[in-house]
Image (cartoon, rainbow, N blue to C red; front, side, top):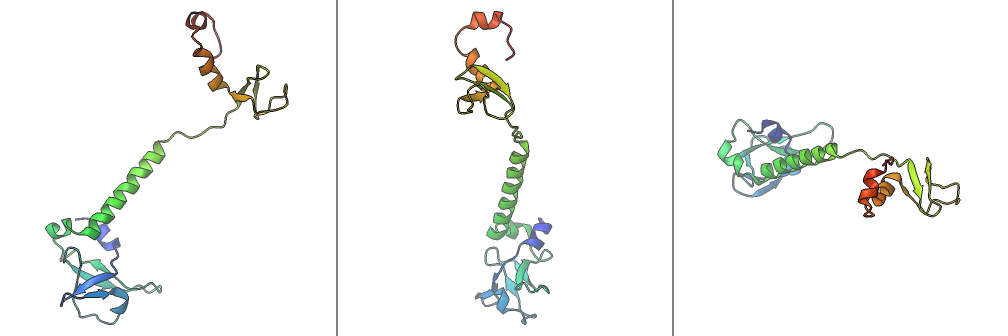
Amino acid sequence: MHKPTLHNLKLYLALDSDGHYVISKEMKNASDAQWFCPSCSCPVKLRNDTSGEDAWFVHNPDEATKPLLANCGYLNTEIKRRVFILRLRTMINELETLTATRYWFCVWCKAHYEGEKHCKACNTGIYSISHGDWCWNYNQKGNYETTITQSNSC
């Protein structure tokens, strides 16, 4: 059950055989002791990293049982975190990409233009709206009969 997650889940606290909390970085030299997960009481192994990282505990997948792991708070939190990240990535990948507006309508001088948001007729861009917004506003005026009969570029 979730073996890749078990190997990647680092615990820095464990219980010793007397039920006392121990910190992983203080247990570097104790290789014959037994430790247990404080949440599910499954056996954990001490891992030492050669790159200078502090020691940590990992669940022992050979000795952990599915019913015990199902109630492990550390494992459940890690699984929920990974599911959340996958959902978030999916939502982000489904978002439409933003495209820069290239077509403008200046409401001050009633000019349509293309390119940078700067009307050459009135020499400003503060009165300009995107062409798409202009089309939507134009079609919402209530002139449904004239809008339908007229052919416009919107």
